[in-house]
Image 1 (spheres, rainbow, N blue to C red):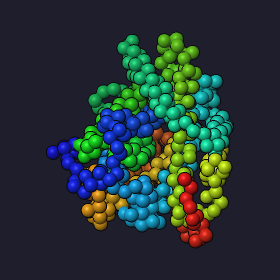
Image 2: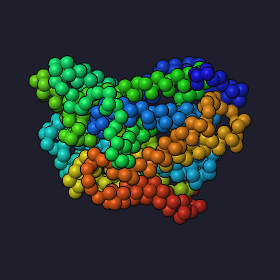
Image 3: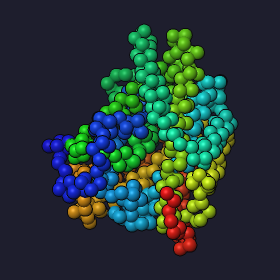
Image 4: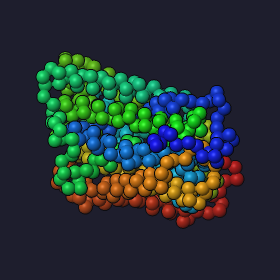
Length: 483
């Protein structure tokens, strides 16, 4: 029996009667699949996987099966039975301190996510002015600082309608450039040009050179993350038991197409040894356009990609910090200074504190000569911190199934314990592998790399929330949470 044929349990039907949206608000499973695709798919990780050539198919498919799918199905059960998001799921399943750690990691990962995202923006924007700037650390640091603080200024003013930038960004900055890149890549090969990366069957698997040869797969876990946020829409489906798995399988297929085909197109045009992890997309466009004498279009593509990335940053900027604020005011996890709101009701102090750390991280670009290496380190730390949250989520899901088997759920994930086991093992393996420097970086100081990643991931993901929790005071609780 396929997962699409598993019926709702009776308690789930009772929950549906109480919590499901009215008929006018129902959405189709195809619409949910497209929503999920728009929130997950991006061209940003394409250069990272293009390094592997044809083997990127394998490296995208494996984490989709062992991480993306378990996360989607498990989160759907939790979202259909318990409101309050990750904090409440983990607090109910494990403990309130664990719930705080989970919601903290959702927020803290953005501290390193924004420098890596805006590092990509800086390298892409360089092709609008001067491609040589793509490897310039000072340029990268300046763009990160200016773009981030501009986003804080916009968010702190309570600007509405920013979400529209991200929805339009899927088409303008992902689908159109991605389709164009693949189409021109095929024309490039059709003209008799050889592929820069071998496309034969014996290159389907990545070359094995020890554990370090598989490290780049860690970045795909970050590419697939965020499914727990999309799971809240399960209650808007007419038949969640059948339709949600269908939506997730369709979304997974679409996401794989969007991730794999542009990565392959890049590997056809740009040799791996010349590929920049931050500017690889623009390198490919510039090389392909040069074949047709269309290089005047390179800056246009750069502006489209930058617009999409900045729109996505604005929609993410206030979200995780807002969730952390609400929980902290109720439970007293953060000091009052960080809980204060401005006149627009925005958690400005949290954004400013986050911005100071982000600025410090961004300045590292100016002092580390290899921009690609810096980008990769920040991406790994981002993934490590986020994976801590997923480890807690999978444990909480198993405990809730065992300790509250009769709790009303609108959707029950098939073989939940097995799914959580696979997801937990995959997340833990990815977290541990992330401490190993990738083989593509060549010989270097592995000890220094380990200390930087461990200090960033474990310090920010575990030590900082422990200190907040350890030194919390009853007076930090707020009587009324903000609306």
